[in-house]
Image (cartoon, rainbow, N blue to C red; front, top):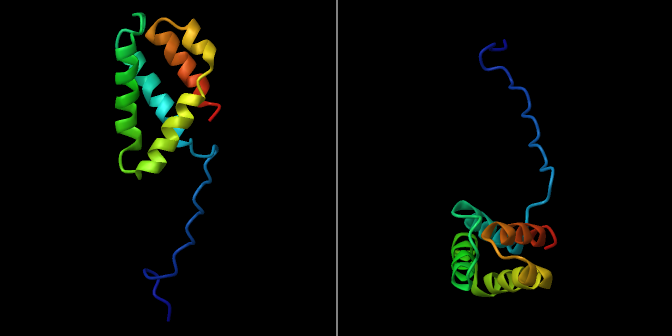
Length: 107
């Protein structure tokens, strides 16, 4: 006799596949730095110290826990993905964030 309460359960639905592949560490690093730059005073000019701080905070958030060679490779790929026109044409934190997001899509 079959127990109605303990009947075989319906098979679980397969997990949905992601629509997009996961972003690379370099892409995540650039996006996190862009997020930092736009959170506070996006219309202010970006200084070298602020750029360094944004990159360091993004690195701490994204790359912590990875082995040093992996983190260094991701950071190097992120920096080399920046178009030279970004360095010359951007002045404000918001403009830099736009350039960082564009570069993040290429790595």
